[in-house]
Length: 176
View 1 (cartoon, one colour):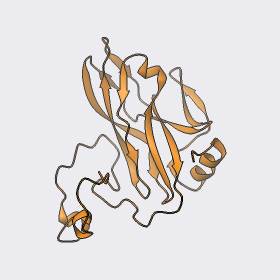
View 2: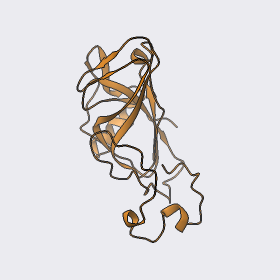
View 3: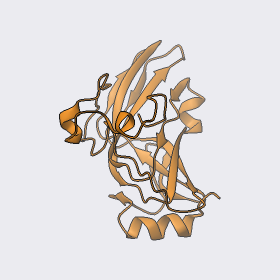
View 4: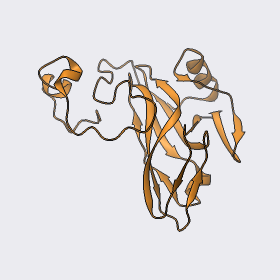
């Protein structure tokens, strides 16, 4: 089930997204709570060359409940100009600022301004609260674009192995 505006708003009031806002417009695009999603903004502006790739961070911080999963999707205005935001999964239990992977497939340099609406998130309600909330390497991600973490650092988990290994699961899980 996909959450409607009133459900997203209620979750935001309880701390799922900070700062959050009802629907507003900036730079000719919407952000905040929409009819069935939440439109997010980037924290720092940049030029995205063509062809090109860059990491960006959201202005918003997330604290995902254990019964919701979020999927990041392109905003149509940017997609029509050639930009794609890789469709990241925000897992139940994850907390932090999203790092977005942006690709310019177009022919012109794209200027993204501070606080510019960049992507939309659709929230899917799970059938129940998961008993395996996200606790892996990108938990508590800091503000600002964060590069890939290629190795699990055992000290990060306070164990001698990663959470995936200690539970007997393979690393192919979507826990990254």
